[in-house]
Amino acid sequence: MCCWANVDKEAAEWYQDEWVPRIRNPNLVHSIHCEITASGMENEPVGKLDSPWPYMTVHAVHNVDQANKDMRNKLFNPPDDVLGGALKTPRFDIRTYREIRRWQVEDWEGEGGSGKMISPDVGGAGLMPPEDIEHIASVTAMEWDIPADKEEEVLKYYMEVVAPTIANAPDVLRFRVFQVDQATTIQGTSQTDKDSKQLHKFFTVVELESEDWPWEVIVELADDPKWKDYFESNTVVVCFICNAAMSWQQLT
Image 1 (cartoon, rainbow, N blue to C red):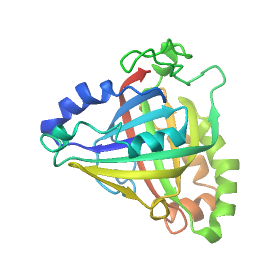
Image 2 (tube, rainbow, N blue to C red):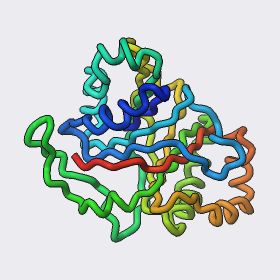
Image 3 (cartoon, rainbow, N blue to C red):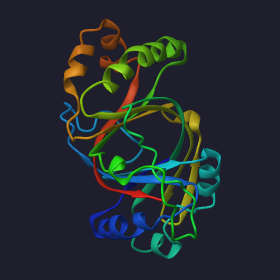
Image 4 (cartoon, rainbow, N blue to C red):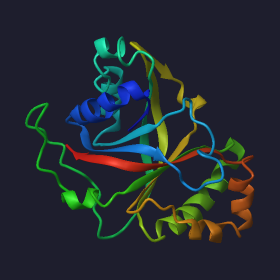
């Protein structure tokens, strides 16, 4: 589950330092809070999300269906008095995703805490050593879509060539591909659910132990005619790409 936050400067400190670290939920495994940074790409960011945003929080969850229920029940929303006051203007886009496939460094567990909470304020001991999650320095996220008539061939190429090539690059800890499940937008005290068919269908998250994107492997891929046809033309795969530096992590 991801929360993309468009928060103005006046509310940013409260949002980052007070609200996000207070989010506790038995279904959460761990959370990674990030702030957008320059990726070195020609356009920053590549593509377009629904709303400009400076912050992204990635929440690993045990159960996507439970996350959807909690999202509908506003368990991840700031209090209504805050949404109607200091956060009346900011916008939050929350999406849940179902994992399709992953590539991961063998000696890095990356699974966060146990999620077994003693109370709403006290989390479990955790299944992953804290130093594992602390290895993450940045996260690159990509929302993307493929025309239905091209989906099978593009996905085959992406899963067999693109993903393992990038996943094997230095500093890449984990490369995961998801499919969007549900989405909602919060602005002020208003919450609006979105039709997932109107969103980018796929979502890629790459966790790195540095803030440098592995451009050397992209240069290798750039020589592949299929890469040029599918990804560089922006006529087959339509995407939004951003790079974000990790601000803090939290085991729940």
